[in-house]
Amino acid sequence: MIMSWNRREKKLVCGNRKIPCSCIVRNELNGWRPLANKPAQDEVVRSLPENIPYMPRPFPVGRWNVGRPVPRSHPYKAPYYIPTDAFQMLPRWELDDDGGYLRETEDMVRDEDYGLHCSSSNTTLGCIRITKEKDLLWMVEKINRTLDTGEKVYLEVAA
Image 1 (cartoon, rainbow, N blue to C red):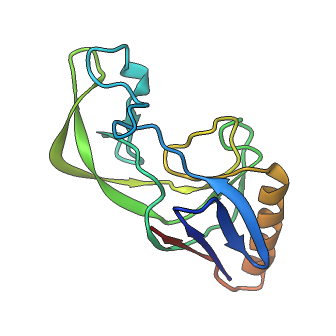
Image 2: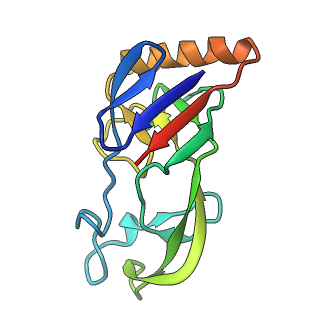
């Protein structure tokens, strides 16, 4: 099974459904994530699994394997998180003396743990946010049924 999403659109295609979604990321490009000289220590995002500071970016373009949905109770990824093997290389950020963002460096860090989920927040750290919980639950059932047959599930993301 192949799901597809064009990052410029607000619909993810899964089977015969077009599912409302978004990928709104707070970062330095839109000014929604504070830089140095602001109380920003708790705003710093760190890569998974390396724990290195970086600025989040939207879900990476490419064809990615989709894993089995995982139940979650945290409101940011509940009631399910649908994992993928998506990753991207992003610049590491240097932090100021107060632990906030200072500047982008030339070093790169691998960021992973991109997936699909509902959220209590309108923004994500790059995941695809499924707007309606009922659509997410439908996707979870469809993905599980497909994986149970031994067929793979892919997510194709276009720019």
